[in-house]
Length: 147
Image (cartoon, rainbow, N blue to C red; front, side, top):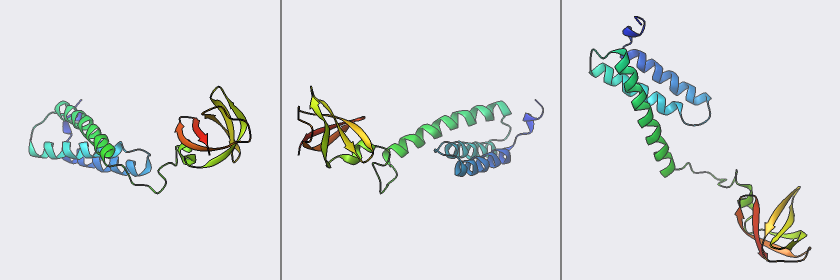
């Protein structure tokens, strides 16, 4: 425990820098918020002399939680702009497109062929070969109407 008693503000600053560097190499945005918490802990330790390592660690843990929650809320309110908003939502990429039914829609369920994939579709009963327009994506099922 004598090792931990020598922790000073500069240790927290170094940890903050290391965590921000790790953030550059790792996916997601977690290490950035931990790095910010470590830097804030360093500033508090610099301002308040004599904090024990236990208090410093608890302070870092609390600031980490606050930093991560605040960061997640901020990112939710300010999403990253992208030129491909439906990149990971394949079904939504087909909304507005017109396809030909491969299998008839019977009891509200049928199939269409999109490039090299087959998609389940939902809509009013229609015979195979009917052209349909995709109006919505509900998970892996495309909602269609005659089109």
